[in-house]
Length: 278
Ligand SMILES: Nc1ncnc2c1ncn2[C@@H]1O[C@H](COP(=O)(O)OP(=O)(O)O)[C@@H](O)[C@H]1O
Ligand SMILES: [Mg+2]
Image (spheres, rainbow, N blue to C red):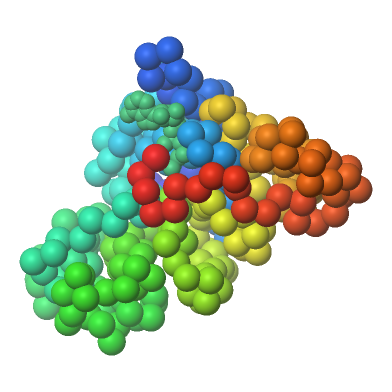
């Protein structure tokens, strides 16, 4: 179903909106995900990042707009259909099956996902491959509760990769990681992009997004504030203000840094929801 000839987006959204009562959580977003590209999505708490991911994966129905996967209209399709079309995701909160081993958690994705493997032996073999891809094969026999936060996030990635996707949507996969764990996680994500996956990565850790993105999109109050190369976007005065508020930006000389186009004008957001659903 998915085509990936050069230039053809694997996933595209046009004028995508979602209203919750009087709140426009996502309003008129256009985006395209291309093979071997990583679109970093940043924005303050409540900007609509998770809602955007939920719309793209069928976990929420759009109020307006269309979603196409490999050129096929998938607007309003259920999550399993989107997964079968080649789009996999991770969740901001990890929810493994606690009564099963790590490898069997991943094997489930092989048995019931698009690959529909019939044999448990084959599914476990494929699951071990996916665990190897995220450097977790040595912990295959553990219970999920025995994993560190970083390894639990790797398990989430392995479950997504076991679906054999062409598009990967990552919702705050770095949340809760210690600083020393962030670089290895970024290397893994970058290697998946180099393998040709199209990746959308929602992240609170702004410098991490800058390190791996081919393009950065900033959401603010559900709308696209700006998009472009990380250096330009993170030095944009409007982005600094959206994150930190005008008064903070001025008080800390961030306005000057932004106006001078200095890299890294935006550091960490003032408020964080690391590890929490928001
Ligand atoms: N299911 C829902 N019902 C009502 N409001 C929601 C729902 N999900 C999200 N929202 C609201 O939509 C806005 C965007 O939320 P979200 O997409 O989770 O933001 P982010 O992930 O950028 O922090 C927030 O104001 C949030 O409270
Ligand atoms: Mg969120």
